[in-house]
Image 1 (cartoon, one colour):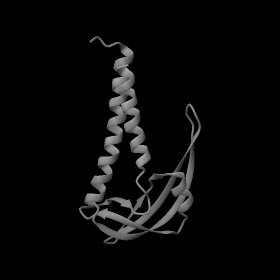
Image 2 (spheres, helix red, strand yellow):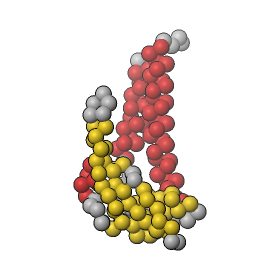
Image 3 (cartoon, helix red, strand yellow):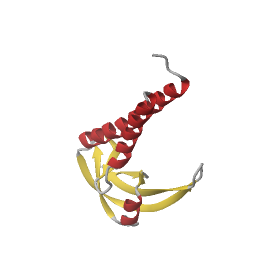
Length: 133
């Protein structure tokens, strides 16, 4: 079977999308497995940033701080719009961290964005479908 350039491009794109989706899922499982200790944390900031590209989009961020054995850590993950609207400066959160590497953590109140991972996986599947049509 000979493949033309558009089929190869679709296969590469599909592979990239599926790789991104699998990475997100595996990374989340890794964090849940490794991050066994919990400490209280505090939301120290929430903001949104307009990103310009082909389309203008808005990304939402939450900054939180937590302490482990006297050392303070700060994380600034991007979050969904609903989480951005839900969390306010000064709110308390529960931080799960890896005792071997305390800067590796996740916040229980911030939900894993399953839709994003599923979107990458579906996009990859669609690209594979287009490649073999």
